[in-house]
Image (tube, rainbow, N blue to C red):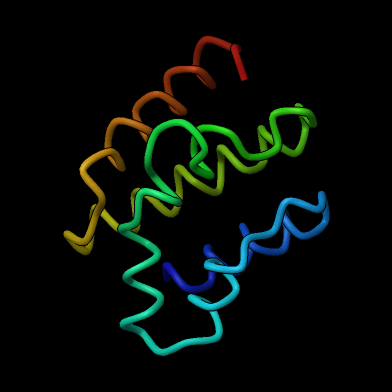
Length: 102
């Protein structure tokens, strides 16, 4: 379920002092607010997004985040509710894991 995975991401980010107000609002809000965040560029965009920049200074936490983002992206793709970059990020994370890069 996307909300559960999003909660795990929020917890991981909070543990590393990288939490986001928009993410907190999405989790506390109704389904509409949550989905707005789930398809947002803040989560799946380019430079500065969670997918691109979060936890880069902590490799172990980043690997964990990549795994959670793979799961979240797959959940979203199964439901047909994605950002235009979701599939690209999921594919990149899976490739990097297979190649031992992250």
